[in-house]
Amino acid sequence: MQRKGSLPCLPSTKEFLTSCFQNHYPMKHTVTLSRLIAIVAFVLFTQLSFAQVLKQVRLPQTGVEAAAGCLACPGSEWNMPQNISTNNNQFATTQMAAAGFCFQSTCAYSRGLMASDFNFNIPTNALIAGIKVKIERMADQQYAVRDSSVKLMNNLQPLGANKKSNAGWPTTAAIKNYGSSTDLWSAWWTPGIINGSGFGVWLQCYHASNTTTATGSVDFIKVIVYYSLLVNGEWQERSATATAQQIQFAPNPASSFVNLQFNISQSSEVIISVIDLMGREVLNLNEMADAGIFTKQLDVSSLPSGNYLVQCRTEREVWVGRISVIGQ
Image 1: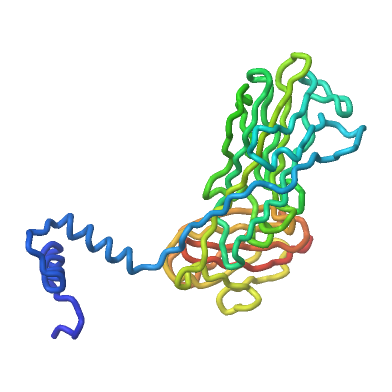
Image 2: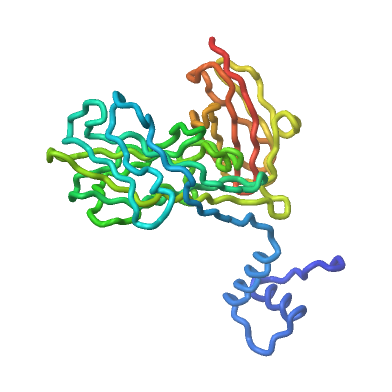
């Protein structure tokens, strides 16, 4: 007996879909199977909950040189570093010595150019999905100037992956993109970190040729942060201390191995990241998992003693916990 509200059991997909839609959405014309499938997909899509990917774009309020005022520190100095805070063809510049030479500020590589105070206001319930950096730069000689280091900063300290390009800077100003909407630069980011004044970009360049000098120029450094918000309960962030029945660590503290366990609502790829308190990712792994209780043993024997954040995430959920590693 068919239950009230249930769909009829029909012998084929086409008959099933045709019957359903003719009963509920009478149509004057013949409907092909492909069109019916497309309609069903659209209806299901509109009924399901998906996390929106949003973005914020900012220029820095502050542009400074690392080790500014230190005459004995190595690295060529940056002139007018504050110019990187606006897109107006007013450049921060550094003049570098010939390749291979460095004595104090007369050097073949630059000091760090630091862009910070981006004034992001990422909501606290956001999950950071990726970070892209756009830098407009040029050189006075073709192929002479190249990236040495392009990193993100936390607390004004560079960390994570170095996204430098091996290509020479162009002789006319052009924008170079680093990172992407899904690239976290091998580090762990929270809204609090990104909204802070110490979040930013670290840039260094070097002179690759043997000519007497070469000048690198930077017009602006722009950052785009991509993130997802809670949508109908998605991205449910869980704390190891607040909801111990859903995520557990044992033993904790640990000296060699730690087992983690939590419940996954649906089959998905699980990405596990272990991050030190400087925001550097020290361990990363991923694997497919079925819905239900997920367990994984992590080898922490190579990590220095200290506290670490553990972030586990799937397409729809994220868990964050804390472990302590003690020396053997």
